[in-house]
Length: 222
Ligand SMILES: Cc1cc2nc3c(=O)[nH]c(=O)nc-3n(C[C@H](O)[C@H](O)[C@H](O)COP(=O)(O)O)c2cc1C
Image 1: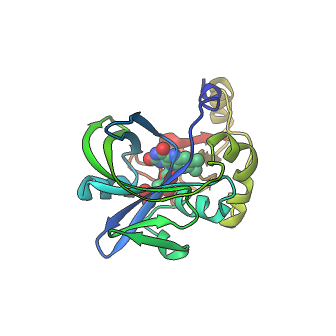
Image 2: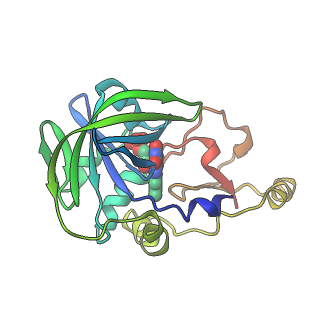
């Protein structure tokens, strides 16, 4: 089933949002245009995301469309760690427009205002209207497919992480591994490997990946 998702033509984008004195931000692929006039987009954020909590408060955010030749560190910085631990925008070259941060090398820089939202148990969908565009450049947009096939190991390296193993464990293998007391779980977002004394299954449901902040459901047994 998961394989079907890899055939979707999603792009990769960086979201930026004001957070008290600083800015928060996240890498996203669940974003799509839903209307041209008015220019409306739909963004799906995991409820565990710190950036999501800031969008809830601020009701506006920046969207930077990443180019295919993006610096892998930018992808890792925004996608593999949480703004609750790291000031992500301080680590890269960015520019401000109308009090929001944008990636300098972006193909497009768009400011969006939230006009509606739908809350699901794990995700929140923000329907937003584009209210300004500060940059449009020629170039190939970065797709999720290109990221998976070419960029992912470079991104892991950029943050000094270990490249990892297949995440496609089928349910039968999974239960056999649990039965064999295998204890290693890997985060399907940032590839952080959980290998602590407390069995992963016993961790509280509110436990989060210490690297990227996603919830337990995003982990796979290896
Ligand atoms: C390729 C890729 C695509 C992602 N797409 C989304 C997405 O569409 N929505 C989302 O909420 N998180 C997505 N994430 C996960 C967030 O970028 C990640 O959890 C990030 O650490 C959240 O940071 P925050 O806690 O500062 O918001 C994606 C991560 C990767 C690596």
